[in-house]
Amino acid sequence: MSEQEELNLFEKIDEGLKQSFENLLRRKAALGQDVVFADENGLPRVVAARKALADYERERQ
Image 1 (cartoon, helix red, strand yellow):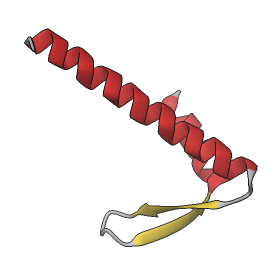
Image 2 (cartoon, helix red, strand yellow; image 1 turned 180 degrees about the vertical axis):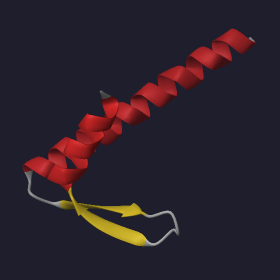
Image 3 (cartoon, helix red, strand yellow; image 1 turned 120 degrees about the vertical axis):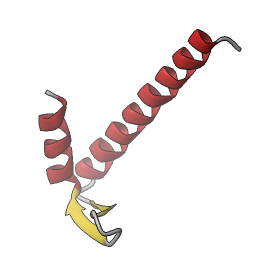
Image 4 (tube, helix red, strand yellow; image 1 turned 90 degrees about the horizontal axis):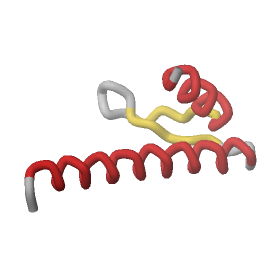
């Protein structure tokens, strides 16, 4: 596999992961559920999916 093919593969994987994460946030927000993230110290942090989705969308712009 050439270096360019490898870069293209990693870009596709990265895009797929981002899309999957967004889909997860949208689904959980629609169901009124929470999501659990790890904070900077590795401790769990529970956030409403609606808030997490709004934060995610704001950061993308």
